[in-house]
Amino acid sequence: MEQFRLPKIPMPHLELPQAVQDILIEADERLQHRPRLLAQFRNCFPNTLETTTKLLEDGTTFVITGDIPAMWLRDSVEQVMHYVPLAKEDIQLQRIIGA
Image 1 (cartoon, helix red, strand yellow):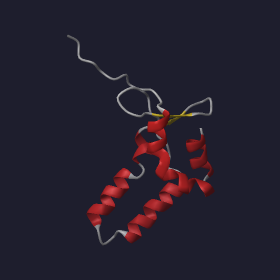
Image 2 (cartoon, helix red, strand yellow):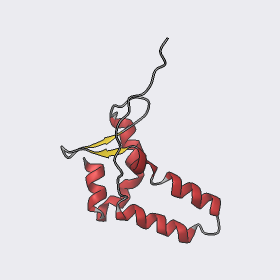
Image 3 (cartoon, one colour):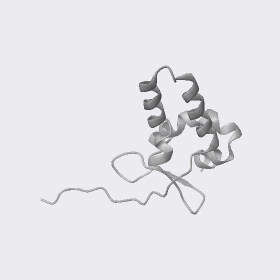
Image 4 (cartoon, helix red, strand yellow):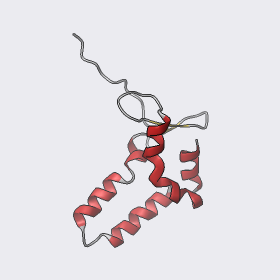
């Protein structure tokens, strides 16, 4: 029996929006006394944008939501929900979330 393998989806590097970079800088200041928590936050907070978000040429955004390369609205919304408050002043983040 052949082993199932997920299809490879090319994921170009996505530069983090400035609002997300600003939150990481703020975390550096606020969590400096908790280095393990800071490391975990710096790893987790930008993870969706860095590993599962792809901007498409047609102006939409594709978010890999799990074990299949399909965009499930419920799952993709949950993956980007924590970026929504930051999007108010960040055009790049608005583009990623709104598409």
